[in-house]
Figure 1 (spheres, rainbow, N blue to C red):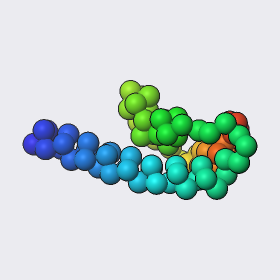
Figure 2 (figure 1 turned 90 degrees about the vertical axis):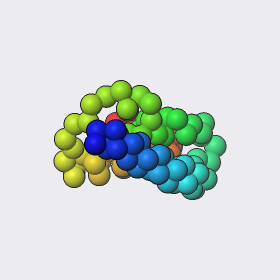
Figure 3 (figure 1 turned 90 degrees about the horizontal axis):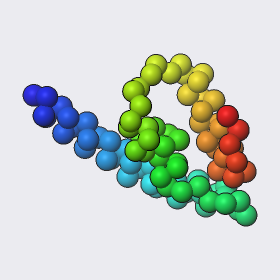
Figure 4 (figure 1 turned 60 degrees about the vertical axis):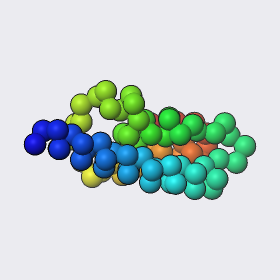
Length: 84
């Protein structure tokens, strides 16, 4: 059962990464004008799906923290710099 759960987790993670690729392309084309483009790997790390994010344990996040993180990602894509 543990192997099945691990496989299912990896399958879900891969689906999320595929969807993230589409959102990264869309957001990059909308907001990235003259700024240095955000790499897909960096974007994955920012939204918690990258290799760096996988190394960290998940922590509880409040809805307000999630909204603030989303806003900072949008600002980064818009301006090309972090607003944490």
